[in-house]
Length: 347
Image 1 (cartoon, rainbow, N blue to C red):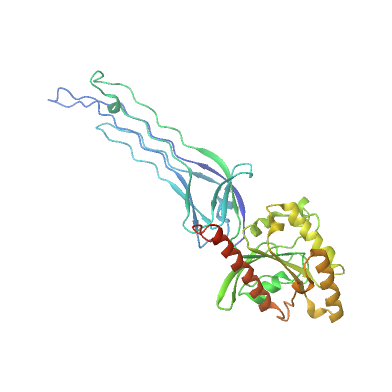
Image 2 (cartoon, rainbow, N blue to C red; image 1 turned 90 degrees about the vertical axis):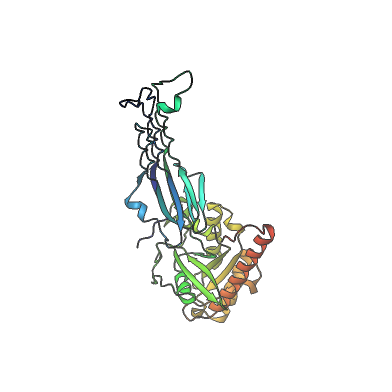
């Protein structure tokens, strides 16, 4: 299944059915009177988050969703039936944006969460509705109210606890494969990862969800490489794992480039807890490791001992990094619960 994290769709709720003008005319019944029924209500457009989806690929092949119109009323006081509603299924983490892709209309963050996107129009009144002591034979009815139509964007932001960022070929996919059951594509050329990958990491009988994102390069905010498109999936994470290729000539420069791109993207990504990971240490001498660790400490303002050493290929430091990430995630969760005990946990 292909991964699609945004789609533009057109939705239109149903129009209400018109009211009916009718009179009861039967043999031997002298005073029949008005008996026109009301029109049915137009169908609604609903959006529901479900747990078994992880892409918006269904909305690539169908972009128009129109609910059924209400049926007009009929004689003998028969009201028209309402139009059938439409419920669109989307993955958990989907945001519904306006047609300019700027304003968030709804944010579906929990399985089973359901929102009304476009309400159907009310049905019109038949002439029976207008009868009174002074108007015994009304010949008036009202048309149904029109439905709502709009263009909206569906934008998926994956629900993950931790996110991997870094330059291409920094070893993010290798770490995802080493720490979870995910099997991302791994190769020795840049931009091997073309779409976000999710993996469930199990450590010390606990689990958290890890998201591997395509690599960033300088100028991503201006569309260079794959751009900033996939950074939205990091917005919901509790911690960022910043991978640095230990074999690079200038690790401090690589770190600064990625931090600048995160800042250019916005959404307070630079304020999230960050674990800096010096990867591929199996290809370095001990003195090179110490030198590059110090360079990263100076560039980030962290202590050199906080720079995590890792070799995804050999497995060195993988478990320790998972445990450290889990501690940060649990700490962030406890802080959120302390701030608002009634709020449900949201990555």
